[in-house]
Length: 314
Picture 1: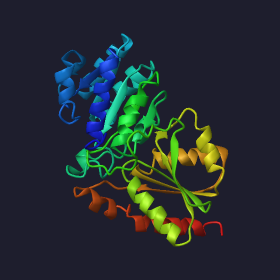
Picture 2: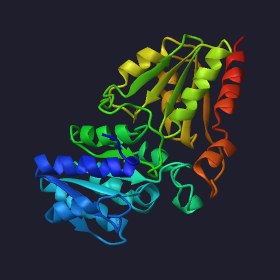
Picture 3: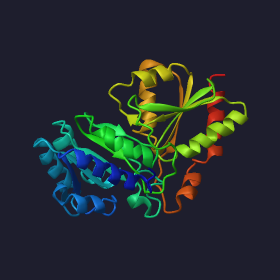
Picture 4: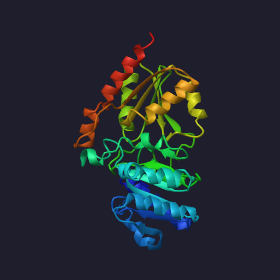
């Protein structure tokens, strides 16, 4: 089945889960339409709790539900969750390790391109990666968001699923499971370097890897779909096969994928690491594709960063 973006994929997965598991509840902070969950509320009015424009209250309500054995999903804009309700996520969900699932939409620069900086969120992963007990899912497209929602209930504890605007390009065929090891190799062109990417610019990184292959640089590309993974052994094994890695993410370079890979490399396999992301800047309004190009995420510019990385240590 195909979905019209990550929001619809979330809603479909949530509805399917609620059909077979009476513990599933959706907690909204005036975000029912934004989460494309109107059909869910109509089908399961008893499983839909509306808290109004109160992200902090929504997280507190979800914490109470989880403490009583329910599995609540809280869905709204990524920054309104991780910034406005950060204390509630930390103290009332993560600290007692409650089984609450969070879905943050408009994540990244290209996820919130229409509304500009107030609705673009490229700090969410950095915030949550510093909080114990939180597992972070970064699905690459709508299909993987659907699978991530299903996979999240297999984890007994808080999970944050990063979603976008609803206009993400499809990367995976339907039915591809969410990689439990935390990554999936999408292109294996050789051992010149490893490119680790995540999120909704993965299509651009794939295009860059293909361009580099034609230029004689043989890269392996991995989609890293779980950050701060509690069992990163397989990813560490992959890192140990290379001496250079480029990370590419639609997020601040601090606290997200780049920081995660740097930590693993520093602790297990010292290597050259180059991080691509937003560096000491905010976003601006514009079309998703134009913004991605303007902030350095064109396939050609990713390739330029690879060429620079290849010169290091020679």
